[in-house]
Image 1 (tube, helix red, strand yellow):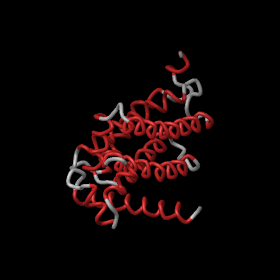
Image 2 (image 1 turned 90 degrees about the vertical axis):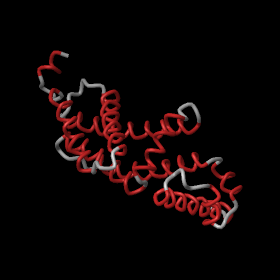
Image 3 (image 1 turned 60 degrees about the vertical axis):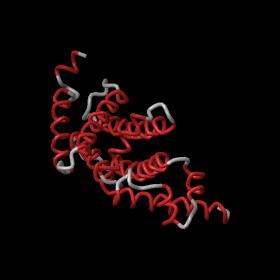
Image 4 (image 1 turned 120 degrees about the vertical axis):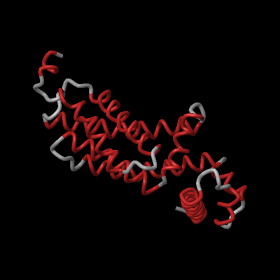
Length: 211
């Protein structure tokens, strides 16, 4: 990598880390591009040239977060528990733990609000593409249990993975919307959901044999 590209990368990483820290401490609304630029020793114009808007800066933080998250989830796929509920529950646990390590609940609320309000913009499109990447990993997880003979192979892996991921997403939305809900509470609720979903998903269940 050339010197200029390395300098640009270093500058971008510094901007992101300053933004992430300030969003955590001060809240998204209170932070301005000017304040981020001042701490980074850059002009506000430079940051606008890099990201275009504060919302896009937030989206880049989410993208960076997901890159790290995907690495952790792939490690899970390589070492899945025997029990399906344990495996999928661990998927959700990794997501929640990483999310809370990277951004605070109020900041995640801003992310989700922007993904809805700006659904037709590049923000919404990119956010959904990040979600699809996570669904792909959930699909690999489902397929792994099918290959083990734990989950009925007749089930469409992609559709089922999408359902499981959306269930996890709902629990995540409820988790970040409630400042009093702990990660352990969210896991208990998600495992309860899974116990209902998997009640008739064994390879030899009467329901699946009829299907």
